[in-house]
Image (cartoon, rainbow, N blue to C red; front, top):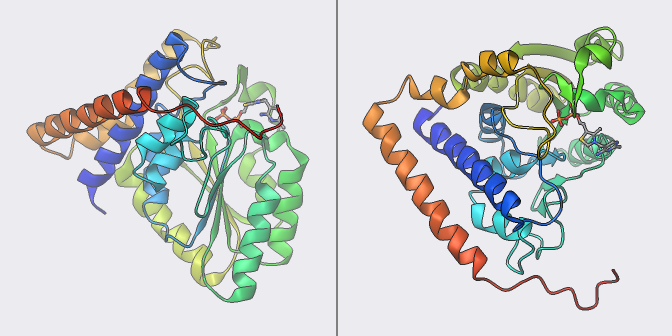
Length: 298
Ligand SMILES: Cc1ncc(C[n+]2csc(CCOP(=O)(O)OP(=O)(O)O)c2C)c(N)n1
């Protein structure tokens, strides 16, 4: 595990998302936007350990997953600003990204059975590639997630479902929308499941090393819950969470936890490097051509 590289990836996500919120306020971004601020350690701990041929499925809160997979803030920003050089030609927008072996959808849970199908196909081909689906706690209300668990268990599909439990589905707290326990739901289908409450890459990375190896080598499904927190509103201004609750979670900011094991000067250099790069990228993207929509039925 290369802590410096993971820290840099997290900075990249954090600074990208904070910049995006400003651009959003300025009216420079198309559609809506759900930022990953606070959850950075999840994406980088897991995705940095995957192989290029593993297949990732993400959701509406996908920017962090994309940036952990591809060091491409330019392609992502251009996409969100409706530019031709966006990763999907500026037509997919924030929630609908595609790049090799990486798919996102704003339809909650919609990708779960597809993730299982891809995992099954990889197993049938004997590749040892795995399928990884990121969902939120609020997505556990979608019936298709349980069909996915059922078939994944019966067919022993190498599918890792990561539940990023940030305790809210938009504005509804988990206590008001989720009965019983998340892990028990997976276990009811005989799918192994576990849970970790951490925002520290030093803990998350080794924790997921074991799980990823098991899914790959034993060719079995697994659901792992990460108890985490988002530091910003659900999407734009819709934040009704108690201020003292937010303040308590901010003490476990994943960037601060990771920086404890790095030299101060090293962190400051990385911060300048990442911020400087994003400054240039923003200028380039602003000055670039808008997406071509000719031929697209609107
Ligand atoms: C099928 C479907 N129903 C409703 C929505 C509207 N919606 C978007 S995000 C969201 C809450 C998602 O909560 P969670 O899965 O916990 O993810 P989080 O936003 O907390 O990361 C809802 C209800 C949607 N995108 N798709």
